[in-house]
Length: 99
Image (cartoon, rainbow, N blue to C red; front, side, top):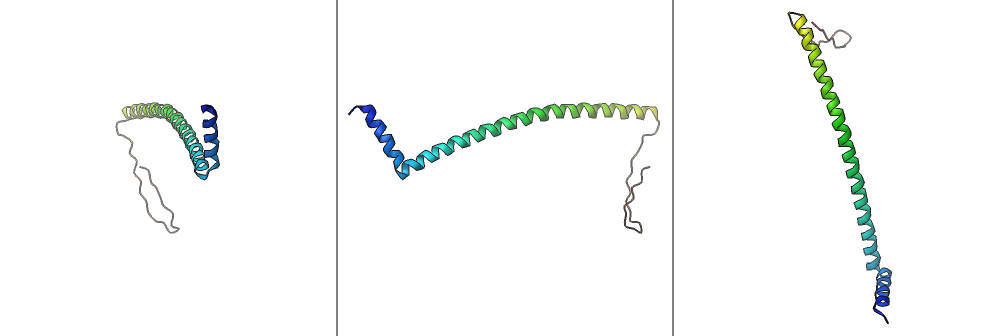
């Protein structure tokens, strides 16, 4: 009997045993877990790229708002101030006053 046939018979015999079947399932599960992990890593990198773009966009908008506020302050001698005051009225609504 050639060596090749012996190996083929040995593999078939292992698959028929409970241990062999369990090993085959474990190997399949391992492959599925690796594929899922790769897909999760791909999604993470995609999300990080999108967040990076949005973060830069938000940063530019905040800088623009800061410049606009500074120009408003320079036009006025006193700076605008925001004060929040809360209190209970008779109907239990909160009041917010802006000075």
